[in-house]
Length: 357
Image 1 (cartoon, rainbow, N blue to C red):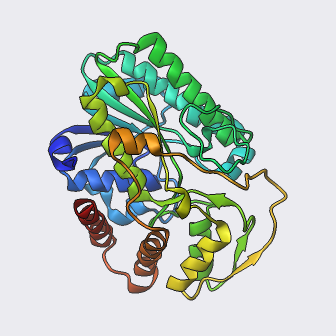
Image 2: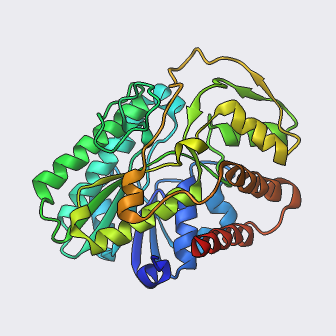
């Protein structure tokens, strides 16, 4: 079993997108483990936000910086000389990518390009996990889960930008970091991540929470669409495990890993909403089919590689996941307990589940 504290305590960890939903959970967990965190983000993407609710700006070094500013980005990386880098910064909303396609490509693809260019200037050993998306695959809407070697594609601007980003990453690995001597890089692709503290637009769980907090019905666009739902801590744990194993095993350099639930936990949209309602009676909905943007009906991941090489698999059942997520929002909106302590407790409870595995 991996000892997270042993591997991250007093280590310099640079996180891009640390103010975002996933980034703030990763930031909090690493803070609990005693890591020295340097966070880079151009802004706090939502209001409210998990990052602000946790008051993480008081607990970690937070640098306001757009990744498209190569000169400043490279200075930060050279100055802090991190032991680990987790690159999460992105424009991650599919619907927004239709409205702002150019900004989506700049953020997702050129932002990653500048990370890779900055790594070329680094003279020390660093382990880098670049987070892309489950939507990088050319989605043929087939029932089998996509494996890491399946075709990269993506029709909407967001998915296409992430697919192109992976082509870029692989090009740099083969052209500039082939030996993996100082710079070790791996790619992480997670499923549809849900959890407390997500207030992004056009995402199912935040949409449900916003509507119910105002005693309104949430609009369900594609009730039968199936997604690999998983709690944010499942994917964050996968990223950390990958970083640790990347440090130990040079053969993982250049490899991509899926982090998604087993097929029995893949549920459609309406099933997720009904399960949320069991934990929060205020949640109600109405169905209005989406005709504006193209959305896939079926997306599944095969995560056997992560299970075999990293010993990673989802620990929470679908019902456990939904309950934990809903309890977080009930605590925020109704009980109004300290969010930092409540989020920390959810991480501690999850770590106890790891120990019992």
